[in-house]
Image 1: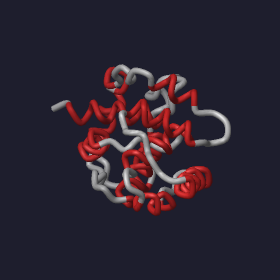
Image 2 (image 1 turned 90 degrees about the vertical axis):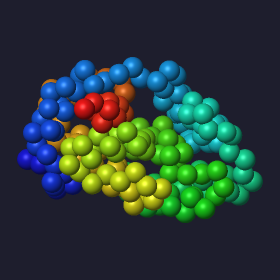
Image 3 (image 1 turned 30 degrees about the vertical axis):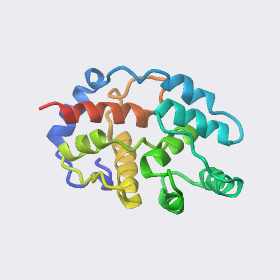
Length: 178
């Protein structure tokens, strides 16, 4: 049964996508797994610094009060809701991509915002806009979750990596294929 979030999906394309899933998975970015599993215990700024280093973001420079606001929001957010992080977009140096990285590495359930993965979802006939808008990221997170639910039992390989990450990587590669 197709989840409601996937209404309008091209089922033939989706079947092709899952049939090719294993070959669509490329190499995981260098340092990804190490960084993923270094983020443990109570969330702190050092965790965000590790994530920023891995992703190439410059170090976030904020005063203590703003840092505590960021950590509080990231600590209380509840998957799959993304609306709570919208308040952080007013802080200089923070955008949706950075927030998605922080959420992914600190929770292991939020997907990393990706233009190519959005294009892969669009190729399947789904509305996945890649816009600097928290609602667009919320749609993306919901679609990734629905794809996870809809995936055939044998499509997603056993892996220590979050299933969201596997789907993002495969969708990104899917979008680049003709």
